[in-house]
Length: 172
Figure 1 (cartoon, helix red, strand yellow):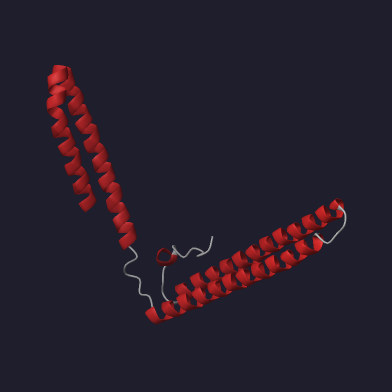
Figure 2 (cartoon, helix red, strand yellow; figure 1 turned 120 degrees about the vertical axis):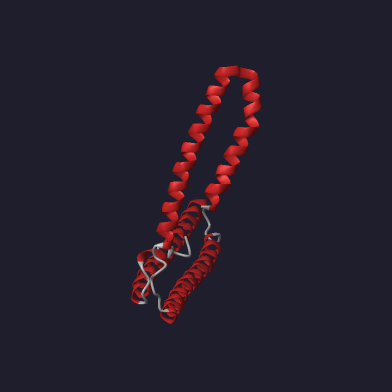
């Protein structure tokens, strides 16, 4: 409602500041245009105000839900711990992959012919790429399962769907 009043005040101020300009330049025809424009803006403001009131009702409609705070905090702790563990596993896996690819690339330069060297380097880089993709996939699957469990836990704590709709994966 506060935003609607601010927008209405802005619209009226705009209309009153443009009134002298329109009247001086266009006469009667300009006045009609101005009046039509003001009417269109007022209609838009009314529609916007209605939409904003509906959004406020929708957001506050779930305010009566009773959530067990201790249960919700425990669910949040479990979710955060699981996501952190998945991320740490991903991080250590990628670090190990990079270390092994470094050894593989160095070994490739011990080969005598360029063709063998290029083939070995391609294999090492492909292995690194596939390993990183698999590590990320595993992390994302773990996180998705964690959030499914989190949503179930939050519902058991008394939260409604609207209370936990923002529970999206922390790592994208």
